[in-house]
Amino acid sequence: MSTTKDFIINQLKDRIAGFEAAAKEQTVGRVLKVSDGIALVSGLSDAMMSEILLFKSGGQEIVGVALNLEEGLVGAIVLGDYMAIKEGDEVACTKRILEVPVGPNMVGRVVNPLGEPLDGKGKIEAAKFYPVEKIAPGVITRASVKEPVQTGIKAIDAMIPIGRGQRELIIGDRQIGKTAIAIDTIINQKGQNMKCVYVAIGQKESKIANIVAKLEEAGAMSYTTIVLAGASTSASLLYIAPYAGCAMAEYFLDQGEDVLIIYDDLSKHAVAYREISLLLRRPPGREAYPGDVFYLHSRLLERACKLNKDFGGGSITALPIIETQAGDVSAYIPTNVISITDGQIYLEPDLFYQGQRPSVNAGLSVSRVGSSAQIKAMKKVAGKMRLEAAQYRELAAFAQFGSDLDEDTKKKLERGKRLYEIFKQEQYLPVHVAKQVLIYYALINSYVDDVPVEKIREFEAGLFQYADLNNKALALIEEKKELTDEIEAELKKVIEDYKATLDYLIK
Amino acid sequence: MKISARQYAAGLALALADKPEAEVGAVLDSFIQILSDSRETNRLPEILDALVAIWNKEAGEVPVEVESARNLTAEMRQAIESYLLEKTGAKKILLTEKVSPEILGGFVVRYEDKIVDASLKTAVWDLKESMKK
Image 1 (cartoon, rainbow over the protein chains, first blue to last red):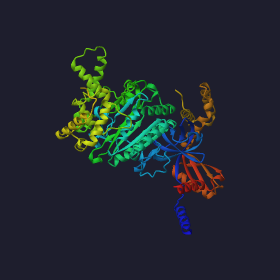
Image 2 (tube, rainbow over the protein chains, first blue to last red):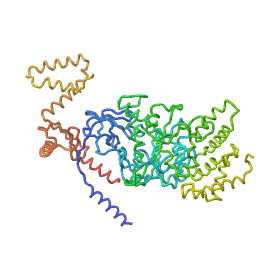
Image 3 (spheres, chains in turn orange, purple):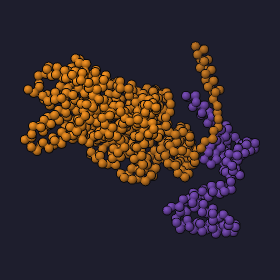
């Protein structure tokens, strides 16, 4: 007993003896004004851009970041409790750019934009600190996007394939399933060799609690980090949240790993930045956003990349989310982000309310990286799917006017109905790529033409179950990733065998 | 365009630069007149601060505030002054002293926008912080 006591006392003595009290010269300024999370500080003549400032107020140190450097004045955002800061308080420079803890220990945690834990699971031992703002990788270091990100969502994997290192925007009105797509994608990354970072910007904390619970239930938290800047956090934290999340993703990129990062959502991020800019008295532009709101998002999304072999071969795939107001994609922020990203998934309210979920609009959604990010088997079965889906919608609208249609058009309409039925998918139930190939194979080879439209989903579920139990086609697709003659024969067999067991087919 | 306090002070300093003592009053009178015409007399304290800063800079003088737990000895004062002369490259140090027992021991030197904190209070605080880790 006494030995442990002595040991502790000795340790403490060593620590105290090892402590060196040094008087360092510091640059300080004084707070002139504090308001709404913004502080104006005089002095601080050698402050750097986005340097960490320490506000020494009432016995505690509050962190701030220098954003405006003027003659004799520094405009800073306060990342802590700005109510505790008083006029005349001392502010010290730290000679450090704003940085966040990164490393493998961040995985499975819910943290705030400064990397502090919010999940009550204790302190995080960080491997390293990464600067929040970083210049994106240059041309020399990059490679073209060619490996797929399997979202597990049938409509997306077939029509709008996403590659590792791509930036694909998810855009749509409120309450239409934007986050659902992102969460399903995270769930489907299990065993796909992918780390995930979900950045929640200005979201309701109850929603995030639900998401965390769902991810835990699906076993997805073992490779996911959640950066949470909730609706009640100050604009300053909302502003740095996506950059902090990206810094955490960059750690894994530097280890040569693949990372998926979701920014949910960038419209709120732009609004937070607008608030900061207006309070810092920067001149407002269109919709009162400051002039550099484009750069705000372009520098963030440009950090998504696919590196070539010489630089580790890792990738960051970004899925930014934008919320539109009443379907207006031509507002300022949506057009900006559409032009930055390599394509968008447009979610349509009409489809959603017709029960078509996920409500992906085939005509307006594109992926500019395209089929190079699909496995060969998927490429073969889903090659013209997007065109077909878009044409069906047009044709269906047109066909409402008359009933006497020619045989060909009728056939197209019937096929389209079944295609859209196949696109329907439950939330939190991603479908494996091999199964997607199976159902699309059945569709394009007219195996579902005699299945009644309202029975399609039942048929699909049954087919998947049957194939899982009785056939090696799925395993073969998984292994070879292409459609050989042998696999095609297997697919045909399993579909025909399964159909032989059904009694609801149209004769 | 609004004229800043620094600009006013710089102008005034230029106008006063090589005027004989007798004319200074007249220059100041007309300066006050300008300010009152543009209704900016309330900015006088601000302008005065800027003027003092310019004045100090031209004369090579640096105002320094030393806060210590006890009264400084002549020797210590000498040491601080020579350190600051070397550090700032100024010709003269304008020392103001302040005794504040709450820093426990040592001293805190403030000049320009720099601070050299050699107080016992900060040392104890740092020790406390380092023990927490």
